[in-house]
Length: 334
Image (cartoon, rainbow, N blue to C red; front, side, top):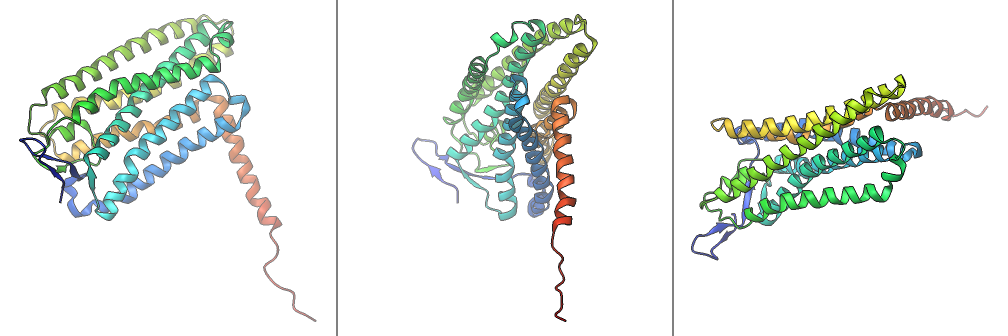
């Protein structure tokens, strides 16, 4: 039975039941295997690229370190959502307190916004590297990079904290069942019984302002970057610069298109079933986590070469171990 608080004239639930994909009812256990497989692929792919960057000293450069950070955020985002969902589906224990719900909401939105802010830092890094190559080593130092990442984290916190803070003050008395696999803002607001127009306005305003500002900065940066890249006299250097920008632009397109399409459909298709909304949320939360390591692993030459070398070493070690293994039969005494 969910907790009920009577601290005010209107009682409010203090714990809820997360019921993801409610249309499937008792068949939700069938979702465990596909989501578990997806999570393992996401974790393995991101961890493999991170391991490659960390273990190779030649990749200890700002661009590759930012890629590793972006992929680490992907792992955190998937881990925030998928394991609790799998636990709920497999054990049917789906109760969550309001405090834990708000913490999960903060983590989800913080990681999404932090992801986008890292893309801005990447754009700045590429801008300096291509437009001011001679000054790049003295401008983009490790201290400068750490400062930018700190600013990105602080900005993410400042954008997400007001939304979660306002949600914590809402009275939830309509129901104690959240028809979602995670504590998303809109899913939780459906349970409110008071006026939540301020919450919705603040949430929508922050999202639009953040997206528009980020897109303007990214378009301005990459327009200058591509223009400068075409002016590079060396064909090899030009191709490398454009290939790197192409990888970043693919990741930007994946992240922004998934979040924006989900947000638009969520608000337009109000008559759609809860299962459709759950599927859209899973799409925009997990698709970038799956696609980003593939893009950077396949398109970034240095990472791709080190990954190929790693796979070759692994394949060479397996036959060697088989050859060195002692015979299984014993020699009989004569």
